[in-house]
Length: 468
Ligand code: PFF
Image (tube, rainbow, N blue to C red; front, side, top):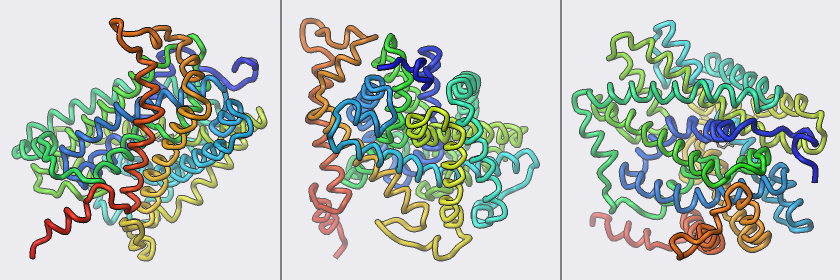
């Protein structure tokens, strides 16, 4: 097999480069925009608790699945399956990965476009009414286009230098700004109600739907279950330690998600708003917080700029997944495929952009318990698809490719993975149990429940809880 540099696929310049690029993919709108509103729609602190369990017990083991598969095969998600088990139908999973990344990019770009619009509004000190703004195609389509153009530009130039360099500069700044805003949010009068909503779990709120949403959010946020980590893993040199690098990515991602909630909920309650406001939560409440700060417009502008950049490092990685597929077919195809896939994503994203009031039909469309076109495709591709992919991935590595092959790959760069801790079991053995049994069983149960099979007796419980 050729080395990546020989076959021109590219490679991360340093360990930190990979961690920051992968964290740049993971940390995005999912942490600061999606996490708070999904938490708000699913009961607050109890959801956060389940989410954390999902990240570390299911998401992290699967992160290692993707990274080891990517590095072992040095291929895009489709060919990673073909290279490791020729003839197995599991390569079809790779196509679902490509589809999920592509479809989510189509609406991710729309929301990222709003962040650009809000940045401009903060700079020009214009008050935006969220409902009015998002329902206006003349306002949202150009910023959506601008964002896609930026994504195409960076992906066509090759990810390594752009992403590594940008991530190094912007991630620390993002952290700093989040802290500034948290301090302001927590010192607002009435903030404590928001804090207890966010941090005091009421476990009676946990049901099958909450677990499904928490698992979906964990996959969405970690960028696990998209084939993205297969792609990024394929650029990792053999000498690097996948285990610790992956762990840092998970810590950075979860940290920013938790901080995102800490920023939003105290302010939501302080301003007497509803925590289950849905996708508008961040865009409605944070500008209200900025308006209370001295030089708030400036902090607000920086915040939305950084949110746009966080979204950009994520959308680049989403575009990179289908592009890597074409690049592996034809080394010279990077630029053309980035442009074609990107422009197509813009066109397919237009209905999402119009589903926030511009088109009544798209706004009121109802399916899978979600209202609105964007909400529906988020449910299908941004939640269900990821869960299906993750299930197939764990079955593939657990039972078809076999954990021993993945372990051999992980061991390179991390020799202690197979060494028993204190004479007991090794991390590799624990991981094997998770991949072969725990992950597939938990994911199947959650999936079936989410699809309406009444496994956990929720229907009976809901029925019993109904007032006479
Ligand atoms: N993890 C990103 C977020 O939380 O915003 C979303 C994402 C980016 C998912 C890239 C998948 C991906 F390939």
